[in-house]
Image (cartoon, one colour):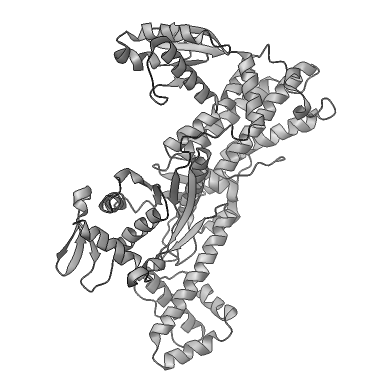
Amino acid sequence: MGIDDFLRKTIIQAVKDRLGIEIEQGSFKVEVPPEKQPGQYGTNAGFVLAKQAGKNPFEIAGEIAAALKDNEYIKDVQAIKPGYTNWSMSNDFYKRELHRLCEEKDYFNNDSGKGIKVNIEFVSANPVGPLNVVSGRAGAYGDALSNIYEASGYEVTRENYVNDHGRQMKLFAQSLRERYYELHKIKKAEIPEDGYMGDYVADIAKQVDVDRENALEEIKAAREMKQEHDVNDYFRVYGREYVKNWQATTLKNFGVEFDTWFSEEDLYKPGAGGKNDVERAVEKIRSAGHLYEKEGAEWFETTKFGDDKDRVVKKSDGEYTYFASDMAYIENKMNRGAEILINILGPDHHGYVKRLEAIVQALGYPADRITVIILQQVNMIDKGKKKKMSKRKGDIILLDGLLSDVGADAARYYFLMRNYNSHLDFDIELAKEQSDKNPVYYVQYAHARVCNIFEHAKGKVRFIEDYGLDEIDFSDLLEEEIILIKAILAVPGVIKEATVKQSPSLLVQSIYDLVSVFHSFYNKCRVVTDDKRLTLRRLYIMRALKTTLRRCFKIIGISAPERM
């Protein structure tokens, strides 16, 4: 429990004791007062309770102030017109909190989602080629969001949906087949319309013979026997596994690993009673009365649930659509125990929000069991110019290339800097720069600087961890020290807020702000001085700062270098 939770619970208890009223933890604000107001913290609880208590906000603020005065860690409590309550914290409180932060492993965690099972699906790129930077943003966001949810007590499953059934896989298999034929001079490559033109397809074709010694003979034999279907199936399976492994390796290098790689093909495998998952899900929604026939096809009346138009589930030729797969996949997740579904999709999937919500409701679940998050576009800026991307034409900026160019730390940090609903301009040159202009360098350098401070302290004092709390004197904290301590202690509250708003960028901004406060402190206050008492106190603050940075860096997925 961080300072935010402590203060909220203290106010809740004060209101109950003084006014006999129950107030919910999230119904009021605890924040830093405006610059001209006194105190280090303040609350608007007086306004929130005015109607319920039948008093004006200033009276209630006074009642809260009177109750808070009895708390040993709170001082200088005041009711501020028209209805705020402001106060400051004692130096002993700051000392206690920093000690808890350094000693308690779960200090940065909260239990707001304790025991709730959440399935977070992200990346889910078609296994038809290497990952591009759009998938990179999804990978960074999904992994950081998963970490934040885990810090809030949720039981998280990280899942990647492998779209290996349908038209795109057929086109990829045909494109790979044609490249292989061309490689072995069987015939000139005839890439199908909307097929995959990138050079990587030819590279995969070359790898076929490396991985399977008799591949050429087997493929030639199948062609001679007019078994083109078997040839296509061979390239589909080989291409899928090759690309899937490629994507997994890229993501691992990016610090992203999944609990589950779920194959769409599995939804079409017969199960109990001979029916597959798709057939069972469609039947469930049909039985609920949400399907109808028109023009030989079967339609889902998604407009009942707020969609802009109804969707085809089964085409006139009897083939199921991607939408039918979505039905089965959602039901499959629910059957595996997921209580909350979070689907992270790319910028071209806005139309999916209502239709996925419709599926959840038609299957008989509350609409709030699913959240669909649409990540906005990534624009790659190289030397001041925006680069264009098209996977089929081969004009793609590979995530592999970006990692090689700027490194995983810079890539993850930049992908998380902006909220998911904002467009992201990724400046490649700036991401490589080793200066304060580069935000990831700026925050990592702070950690290295703290490590250097401890290195400098060797020989002058013992390891700060070896000192008992009673040996550290917090009695005369300076304003600069208090400002830094407050910034450190604010982080657990930010993690909790980032969970509610599903926004890792809040934590990224908090890290940057904390580091800015530290750099300002460092420029004004020496840590290691001839005054041992002052040195010990500041080293203790540095210990808390180092612990906080390392925890934050782990959540957003960047390293904590000790030297730079």
